[in-house]
Length: 251
Ligand code: PEP
Image (cartoon, rainbow, N blue to C red; front, side, top):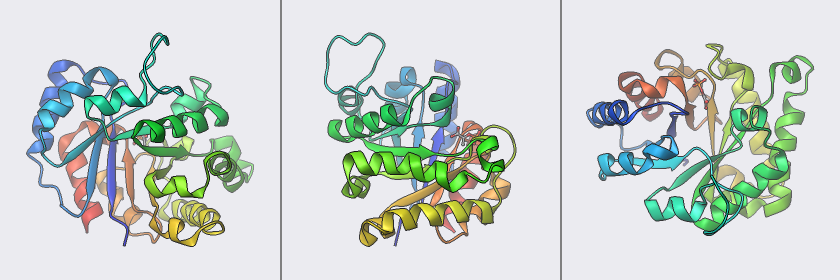
């Protein structure tokens, strides 16, 4: 039985004051114990959030980490080791905004996945196709290629301590959501790709859907057999909405 997970990606949002308010409101939400909840603030706010969460049932993650491990001369980067030292448990790897706007290749994403695990973080590996790729009928090919790169480089066992998020690029921040059937088709293909190498790993790995998840569409997405929760962007900045999504994952 896979434990549901809801992850809130706060992206490049928040000030000290708004983050304090958001965490205060999140702490007041009733969250199901059966759901693992994690928030991903900007790097600047991670320590503030960890302090404010204070064991309140949220895990905290980073939105990115360096492809290099340890400490040293790499201006502007933050390593997995530093994030672990600060109290982070999770890290997003390969978010489409980093792939498409910041030019992260499959190779870099794979290096970051490995650096995250070597440093002691659990990666949430993000995969997804653009609208053009979907319209060209290439969704499963693109997602399969992105996943295969990490499997080929680090082996199937690496997914024992990782989560995968399927996030169609055209659904991120656009208000367009994949239908439950569209999302399920891709999730089933991801699990099948893993299963061809190791059935136990495939059955255990959690597959989150991301792309305009809201309180009003969460329940029908989470009802699908291979959707184990959500990676939530915009709606994670509203405590009531995020709380409702977490409760939908618990039902
Ligand atoms: C995301 O950026 O990971 C995301 C899913 O964003 P949104 O929920 O706003 O579409």
